[in-house]
Every structure is written in structure tokens, then in C-alpha cells.
Amino acid sequence: MAHKLMITDTILRDAHQSQAATRMRVEDMLPACDILDSIGYYSLECWGGATFDSCLRFLNEDPWDRLRKLKKALPHTKLQMLFRGQNILGYKHYADDVVEQFCRKAIENGIDVIRIFDALNDVRNLEAAIKFTKKYGGICEPAISYTISPVHNEDYFVKLAKELVQMGADNICIKDMANLLLPYDAYSLVKRLKSEVDVPIHLHTHNTTGTGDMTYLMAVQAGVDIVDCALSPLANGTSQPATESLVATLKGTEYDTGYDLELLAKAAKHFRGVAQKLKEQGSLDPKVLSVDTNTLIYQVPGGMLSNLISQLKQAGKEEKYYDVLAEIPVVRKDFGYPPLVTPTSQIVGTQAVFNVLMGRYKTFPKESKALLAGEYGALPGEVNEEVRKMAIGDKKPITCRPADLLAPELDKYREEIKDYMEQEEDVLSYALFPQVAMKFFEARKAAREPKPVEPAPAPAAAASPAPPGPGPCARPPALLPCMWRISPSNSSKELKSKGTGFPVPSACRETSDE
Image (cartoon, rainbow, N blue to C red; front, side, top):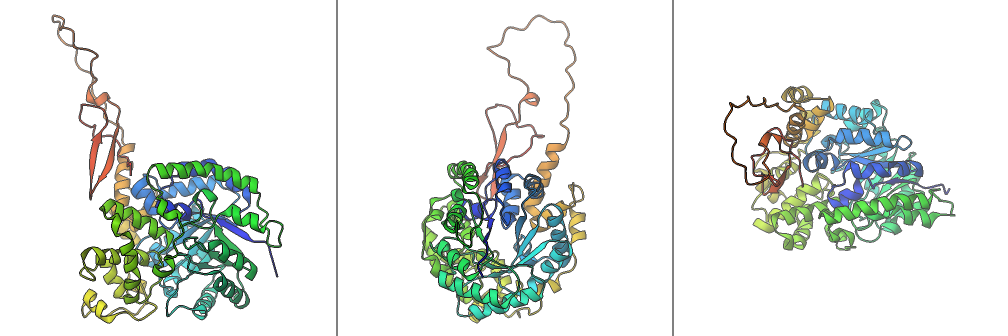
């Protein structure tokens, strides 16, 4: 039976992660929140994924503070996040006590819907996050990481969905991170899921291959309950299909969203300015805006594409872009056909870069070794044992739930940052990104410490007047405004003082222009 379609808008998270390497600032989000809050979305995806890392590493923002600000500005709309199962928002497995505390604090600070996925579709890596999301009152939305390979088919995905429902799923998400789910396949999969599981089905795709709109339309006709879209200024290409286009398409039909196109246009007007800013600062590369049907071959998701471009630019190797893309399917097959989504997309992508620049399998990053050793969970297909032996030697891959090998970690992290801790959430920031978070904490602490007051100079003894100087008197360094920044210089950071001839005051706060 047909029913009204609901939409999750990704403008505050995946849209700019996929197109602009997650460089949108909270100050660019808040002015549009009143409008966004009035539209009636199922939810707004605003947190998780790469936003956490980017806030700390590049934007000089506390991600927890961002979440609290958005919750205050969006009181009538559910806020949604992307959660990497036992990886949380990082790139390795964390102990269960860290997973529990993160679920608790995310929900306390404003998250309503937690979309939980595992890069390998290993349900053992979802157990803790599902359990704790439900324990603290969140809406639990486990995801199927959709991919195409000799070991992934419709029966595989339906079986996985049934397991997730048994584990406590409130919704099931089909997470098509690279726009590989073609329209008729979407119709068939959604139809089967609607007949075999009794929870809402939420579909997420991109428009990298140019099929996203058609995929959504077929899924709608098959009975999908919710889809992910992005407001048009940051839609399409490696991002999601445009919200306004789907709303207009369904208007007056039995699937009508009921959303006001004029309100959507007002919100889009604001984000057009944001998109222009991202283009001007070099974060939004034109490559991510075009259709690339080769994605059906190399299966690279949108967020990975934008970050790959950014990384190759920094390395001065942009000309190797398509060579790296061609190498990715080779690595993926050898590694047992993992779906390409964080962190496996980064692992496979990095290995492909190493293979292109240094020779095939001449070097293995530690993450590649960990993946082949079973530290991320069970790989879905057969691994090239020759490649695995090159990476880990005679080491036997683990077969248990990887987190079972991890001792509780929270107390250790809390002790390590006790001198910098201002909120309980800081422990979690540090647990996920220790080096990046510590730099952020140090800068925050320095900014809040009172600056020393220099004593007034003693009155000078009477003397003959000094001859006039050559012009306006220069102020002493202590009185100069703090105007310095950090700019990237390979692996180090270079301090630059703006427009003064005096040493940079040590009490000044560091800010990043990256």
C-alpha cells in the first residue's frame, strides 16, 4: 500500500562530507536552522561520520559543542548521526565501555537517531552499539553496507536485515555509499525487505553514477519509508540526490512528502552561499559534481572521493587520481571483497595509493595488516593468501569478535587527559583522536588562561628630553594584537606572524587556516 514518503536531509553532514571534505562550519549551519526545523523532515543528519575528526583537526571546533548548538537550534526535528559500530567515529575498534559512553553522551547531547554500520557487515561489531543505543533511549537504525561482489547478493542482504531486526533494530537502513544500487535492484530489494521484516526501511544513496534519483523513485514505488536527500546547493555528484527535486516529483501523488517547496527554496538560498564559500576556499572540487559511471567498476564512495582528491593535491600527485581508482578493485579483491565504506574504504584506498606510487604490495600500512589479520572482523570473501602472507607473515588471523580482546579503556584515557579535561565528553574525543584532540585541548587551555600583565615601568629620572623619533612610536610586543596562524607545511606546522616586526606573544591562541 502506498504511503507518504519521509526524507532525511544530509545537508549538515554527508552532503558536505561527500563534496567538500567535511569543511562546513557550524556558523554556516545555524542561520538556516529555523527554516530547516519548520520543514517537517523525518530527521536531519548532522553529526558523526567524518564531522568529529574534521571539527577537531581542521575547524577548531568542539564537535560536542556543535551538537549542542544544533540541538538548541532544531528543537522540533530529530537529529541523526552516523556511527561506525565498534569503530564509533574512529578508524579502529574500541572497547565496549567506550562504545557505551559514546552512545550515552551522543544521546544526552542531542542525537535522536543513531545509524550504526559495520564496514564488513559483521554483526558482531554492531552488538554493543545497538545494545547501548537502545539502553539510553535512542532510535536504533542499523545499516546494511551495500556493495556488489561475487559474495554479495539480495539473499545475503535480506538475511542480514533479519539478523539486525532480531538484535533490536527500530529501522533498517540500506546504506548504498557509492551509488551502486541500481533502480530495478533497489525495487526488488526494498520489496523483499518490506515483505520479510516488520520495521521501516530507510534508503541511503548518492548520485555519483547518475542513477540516484531513479533508484529513489523505484524504491518509493516498492514501499520504502524514508530516503536520504540533500538540499540542492550541495546535492548530486558524490552527494545525495536533491531534496527539492524528489519533493516536486512526488507532489500530488500518493507518496507526497507534504514538504513546502518555498521553504526548501529559502533554505537552499542560504546554502548556495555556503557552497560558494567552500568553492572559494578550495574545499569543493568540481570533480565531485560530475557523473562518473566508472564508479560502478571501482566502487568508491563519495566521501572517499573528495578526501582522495584532497590528499593527492597535498601530495602533489593529482595526475595519479585515475591510476589509483583503477587499482582499488584489485586491492579489494585481494582483501576479500570488503564493502568500501569507512574505515575499509580508507584502508583499501591507501593501499591502492601505495601500490601506484611505490609498486604493488611493496609496502603495507599497519591498517592493511590489521584488516588482513582479522582485527576489524570477518572479511566477507576469500582473501588472496599470498598477499596476506606478504602482509602479516605466518601470523594466524583472529576469529573471535575483535572487541572481546580489548580491556576497558575509559579510565586510562581519563587519567591521561586529567589536566586538560573540561567535560566528560573530552575523554571520548581523546579516545577517538588522541593526538588531534590533545592539540585542540592545549589550544583551548591556552586561550582560557589569563594573560600575564606586565608591570608599569618605573618613572625615569629627570633627564634632558630625547630627540624626536622618526615617526609614530611602535608599541611594545606585549600590546600588539595577536594575529598569527598555523599553515600546513608538509607534516609540520609553520608559525606566521601577520604584519608586525615583533616576536609572536606566547599566550596567543593558535588557530588553523586549513
